[in-house]
Image 1: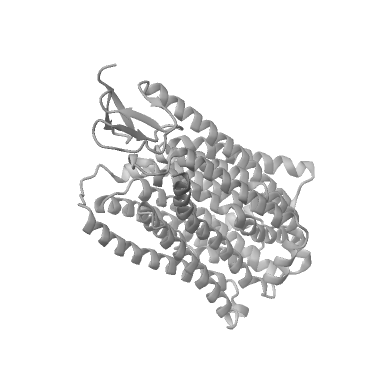
Image 2: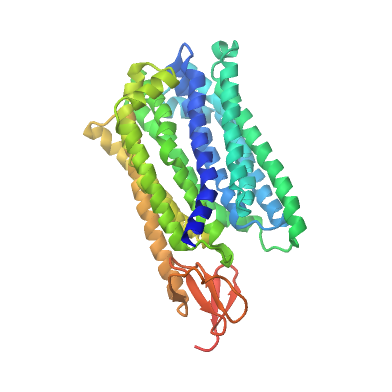
Length: 500
């Protein structure tokens, strides 16, 4: 029985892991589109700043995957979530226009990053060209969340693989054209759009097919208490956490560039960070998808073979494997330099500058897996507000480290990655504390619960039998003749004591 549970988890997470690895590899493909340019370092810095700002804007939209996974169950709710997505996308596009055509953009590129006139102007144009990426990114993840409800992770993973394949084809196709020499920054921009549109098209077609199948098998109802306000209340803590995670990179780039005074060393350091960010994430980035396990398998008392202890053991196994891979790739001499010089056609000097930052990246999986496990439980319980303090603490600590470490002699790309690691550590600890506090409050408010570790036979059953619900960190068992359970306003299980 345990083997079947772990097989279900593996079958669910494998395509999602492939999705994240593919996305991280695609970032390196985009870098390859610029590494052969005459002024490769300058082009990498321009696109690096513009793309990290775009990723910062796209980060909150990624959480619409959890909106459709947890909140959306019928056509009306899907429409409400989509309207919310469009409204937020309009705000992002407006900000991109302000960066491109107003003094606000000049302030970002010249005052904050201390870039020269040509580099700053090219960066603002790149931000404008990428302004619609957050919209398509959000729409893709929104549809993906619905498909995750139906356990169609293979379709989600396949769409991302096709995204990367199209990007690779676009980059190498454009490198043979004059545009690679005249306007090299357009190569990765066009590749990003072709890839994301391909991914959205595949996911949307899959959505149409499986929606039709589901309608024929189930009676759909449009009755719903979901509203735009409720979507925002669920989404905003996740969005802020994601935004802080995404803004960490441009903020680190900013502090690193200012620390080096906007010199050629600053441009070189930003170029190195642009290279090591996606490379360092390749082994561990997919651990973030562990957040989807508990909402997918344990919510709504589904009577599945998978219980919380299976997910806990599965998470630990994934974390251990990724740690071994990371240390093998980044600590064995020659692997990193060979990858950059042979695959991306970079100079040995630049490749050697990437070695130390990637060694620091090798410990990131520990905190990513730990954080994902606790976040998954909070998502299942719809306690997303508990995640908000971790974002604030991470941001404060990140700024402190970026100010203090240069005074201790740490500069350039190693400073940026070390600061990022410090932010990961405090955020992970904060999420763990939030989980403990949330569980304690729920136990205190529901004293009639009996918490125990479920057995393989403790599944949902008919009247008069034991019923299980993964409410707390252990699975909770209720007897129908002792406790009456009803669905409350906040979608939490509320007990009405009848005879105790």
